[in-house]
Length: 486
Image (cartoon, rainbow, N blue to C red; front, top):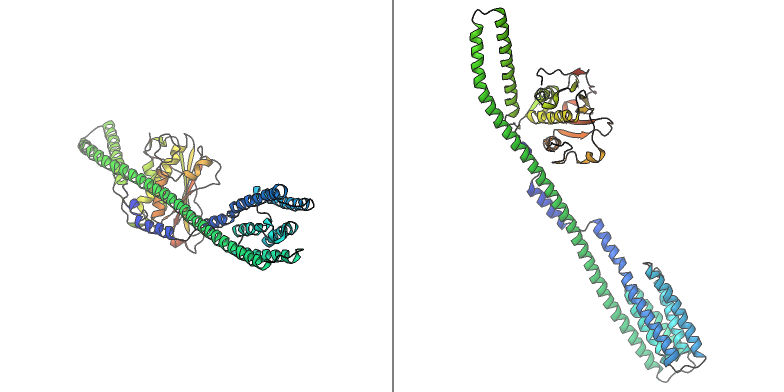
């Protein structure tokens, strides 16, 4: 049956493109937003690496100043070394947490600022007071704080450092004459360094966030593009499979019509000769032989007629059809299949099933594909059971064979085009069945996962006339006896 309606029911490519464009313009997905937040968090780790280097640089310079360069007294050197050692212990803890992907005391940044203000204040107090070179540690601390934390924390740290430096002034044994100039100069230096560091780090953070957002958007677009390519590839495969199936049906239809024409004319001549011979007064033996010949001629003509009916171009017109009759028609066609021999076919048709509005030829093709697949899956002596029933507002048709069954890993791929478990199969039978039912909105097809032996496919057809009606169970078993033999 040549079925042009199958391709007509394919998804519209224009609509698909519009949907894809809308998806491309959509805001970042939750996964993309999570990626942005993750990148924002991971900013802390590179910032921590920078701050660690600044800390260790300051400590190394401090040890050199105390022990090799400065003019400190014998009393001051041990005290300063102890203070620097406390700073080194803190730096080691910070380094340890950094290697583990965490920020030491990251949830309490003001505690760190208080500790640093106290640490620098003690160094300056035990060194040279306001003239101590350790006062420049305040600037390093502000740079570190601006890199690691928010502007609000940085400005709070600036206030703590100003308090610390002012405390040094008033706790010094001797206050220098230019103390006000030094204090104002240090306030200007710390304020300027804090502002510049905050501005620079904010610029870097904002640029990093923008790059992260752009990267997340690119990743989202890449995933969308890959999904679009996969979907288009699948659509092309399905369209190609349907075209192949249509070409096969068209070629089969032309072949069947040609055979019927070429064979029909000689058959008509032979039939005429038999009828002429029957008019003579023949003996009983001759009459019986002529009747047998005439019967065989009628059977050949019936076979050709069924062949032509099956291969004619299919119509897309919906008609009210009896499901049991459509299955019987499919069985009549399948009796000419070469692998029918030795198979027991049992039908259990429900009685008084309501008619359904379907495309007759399409549904015959669905049932025929399932029956032929069942014949391929069974050996001589095995059976195929076809059942119809009504339940939950649907007519259920099941084709169950007791053959070798289907492997679990193959079940998800059964309805994909070109997938087959047969050595000479095309892999289009079940795909065409699913395509016909879904695109015509007639129903669905699925494999029954609960079956342990063989394979069982269930076709569920929509039927409005079943709404509110009681369940219609399968009828009694009936074994099909084909007239034709192989």
